[in-house]
Image 1: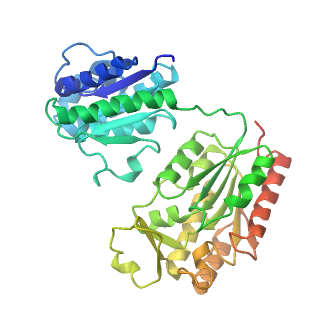
Image 2 (image 1 turned 90 degrees about the vertical axis):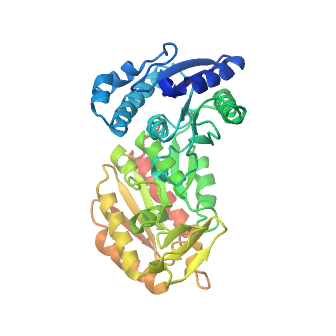
Image 3 (image 1 turned 180 degrees about the horizontal axis):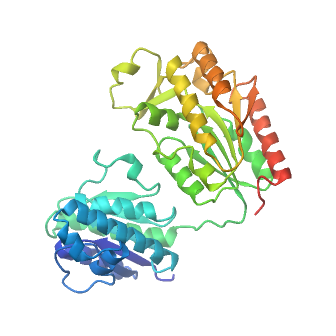
Length: 411
């Protein structure tokens, strides 16, 4: 098995022993290492492969300027810019296969930027004193980031923290050896959905698209899934998207933590990817299962999905707001956009007898969509439910038209 190289990032002036311990564990498993120092004030026990001065220079600055900030926060944000810039270039050059970053809150802040800078599929591990903490905003997490709590290791090595450090060393090296790179042998259609029970159109669409020679990547739009979808769309790796699950957008608009960041419903359009869009589940706002539902959402029906997630139903005015936000974002697209509006329902739970059944709210939403979706965005109304065969058939018909006229480019 060819040796894999791990980039180790940290503040070597204060965490030298811990970082060197991880390096020794990786080398003991026949891996290679590259070291990057992101400290500001002190120096490592021995030179690192990438010095703090090189990191500062990559941010178009210097260590002296970082010191002159007289602010640890500003200095480390500058180093985060430099580290992120360098890892992008090093990864493009094939200098490393995975990254592990160690730190308290300062280096974790930097680590989140570095991990977001790297492509999906590059193993990225963060050993942190605040792993899984509510301090970490979901929008700052790379879609495939891995974290482990740096337990008992804030200052100096001991048997407890070695357990975390050695696990991280083995995990990142193992991931680089096990990861299967994307083959890119078929054009990829990106699709979003809310599970497979609330929204089930993928069961009809996936086999039909595969018969046409396309690969289909379906993203669970529960925050991290939407972030992964948007990240890949930004890189132009889809030939078309079927973005049919929108509750991440309603979550963003109305303040739920279960969202995928401010770029939801924007990346494909900015990149020039043709979009088929539908308002699946946009009538819902999600909450963590452990949360109390905020008072403003307690006066309407809600659906408890499991102990992790529960959803309240948006009222009429809130639904109109989501329609307006959809239209605003889609109008900014640089490639064709076609909206499908299923007037008989937009998720399984809004059917008669379901927890989210609100025919008046659905009528109000559809009425607002008719007002706000304007040229060049196209819209087709369907006298059907989003989970019906008729919805899938209409989506495939438009997809085939786009293939025929060259809107969807064949790779």
